[in-house]
Image (cartoon, rainbow, N blue to C red; front, side):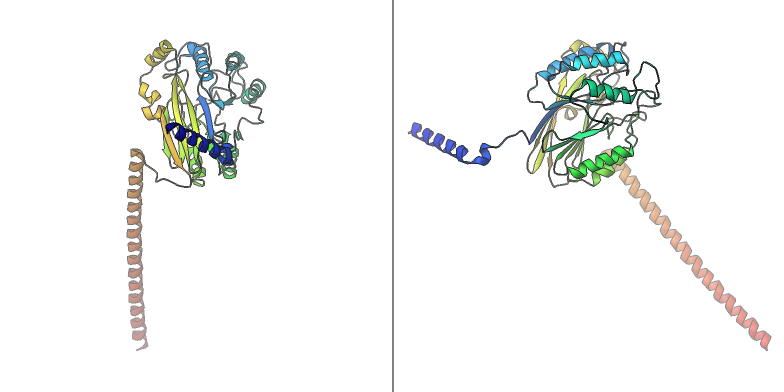
Length: 385
């Protein structure tokens, strides 16, 4: 009896999948995207600093590449800036020699350490030269500008931006020029049916406060995003050497750790774009070189600020398509909103009092005018008599 049932079940199964062409042709290739984000390699032979183990930067990079090569199913690996610590030929040579060991396609985003300003030193490469080097030695990135966009498959749009000024600036702040803001706006407008993935060096939302590392016109992003609040968007950055994941509405802001600073890690992100929702799975990969990791950790005062909370490392976030969730405000945002509301009430109160005084002054003026008119009439009557 059991054998008969089993045979019947197998017959129905084969019949169903053999005749139902929709299932027979179904593939996850278009709805899934998986990539690794590596940030702040800082390739160098220089001595270690307070928070960068520069003398071990190449070892950490090689270890990350070995780990990535053993991860199955990646579509690409993207480096979100500061590939080198100083933009000289030797550092770039070492970086690209190690990059050749990577088995997956790679993309490179410019960081503030990756180019020089106004020929700060004859041995440092300016942005135009660096862009030419990248085009020459990375076969996967033959674009005319440091910023560009492409679709790895029909469900996704990848946008790479250049937020850097370069070495030699008084600060490490970032800025996105109007040309790129227009480029970003147009790319989202033309691809609202896709999942939008944005990669840049400077985070839009800081993982922690820093007056000389922030993106100066971050507010310009939020203004653009407000126009496309139903579009699933994720923004990936590095720069702060810190781990942080923040969701605001249908936008996910991801700051990723540095290879050269504790916790000496990188991320993989696995995205599935279903008909009604998008699921992002974030996975943290720490170095296998634990002695170097301990050395890096010992040089930091606030290790937790760089490693983040557990949800800043490994997390799963779902965004429902066509639905805009009520935005959850942070304590600072709630406090700021209350202060703003209080200020508005005070302003309204002052306006009301001002209007009251203006009305009072007008009535008093009208009263004085009538009294003056009455006196004039009286004087005129006296003169007539």
